Amino acid sequence: MLDLARFTAVGQLVRRVVDEVVMTRFRRLDAASIAEKAPGDLVTVADTLTEQRLTEELVRLLPGSTAVGEEAVARDPAVLAALGGPAPVWIIDPVDGTAGFVAGGTRFSTMVALSVAGRTVASWVYAPVSGTLATASAGSAGGAWLDGRPVTVPAGAGWPGLRVVNTDPRYHTPVDQLVVDRLAGLGATVVPCDGIGHSYLDLVTGRADALAVSWEKPWDHAAGLFLYERAGGCAGAADGTPYRVTGGNALPLLAAADRPTFDQLCGLFTAGAPETGGR
Image (cartoon, rainbow, N blue to C red; front, side, top):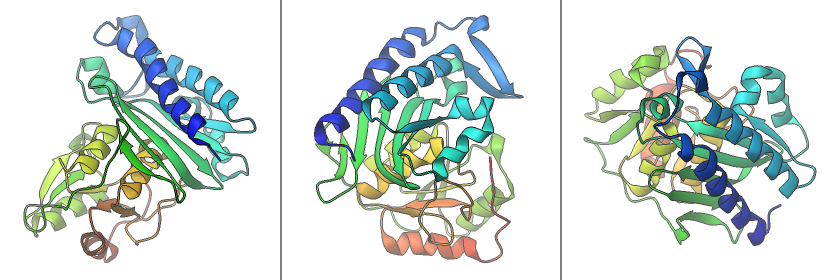
């Protein structure tokens, strides 16, 4: 789908657009540049301009492709239907962690994934404050890279003391309460998510050991879950099935450094879990 030249070009494009559009506005936003899509759900001019530029240039890079971006879906939910269509789809989160970006925090990122027939085949996660770019691709020559160097998920801490990323408490659902209760019984350390893109980088580099979160939006998870799997980790829905960008996943979404830990997490949440769904 993407040869090495175009795969590399996407990473360069993401870095260039984010540095030009997002970082020039970091800690410089005025009130007119910030709005609410819904109560407490912020969007900035950096989000909209970044998504617009990435959409235009990515579709041009891969003729016949289309794009599903977070802000486009906020304006028109029908855009999501493209994920189930035949065309390759670029899944774009222009600024993950917008609230933190607005507040001047540093754990925001930009994520892009390429999906074909509902299956992710490549991804890019860029943390612009540190300049870190994580990339992943499918196929026999694929893998995962951190700033151009191959990366492999380190062994997890094991039980007890497993560091598990969970949904920010401000957005907790019944699924999250189940996660917290059951993990506490095993002595795990619950780490609140303060930017899911950065959380995936934490998982890949060993700063966190596992993940259990209650929402499934494709722009939040397609790139990061794919990156984690290509780096050697195990990830998917609570019933053990692969993550579906089209939705309907059994929640929470889970990730762990090895298959036994992933299977144990699945076992914790398949019995008596709340219904699927999420923000």
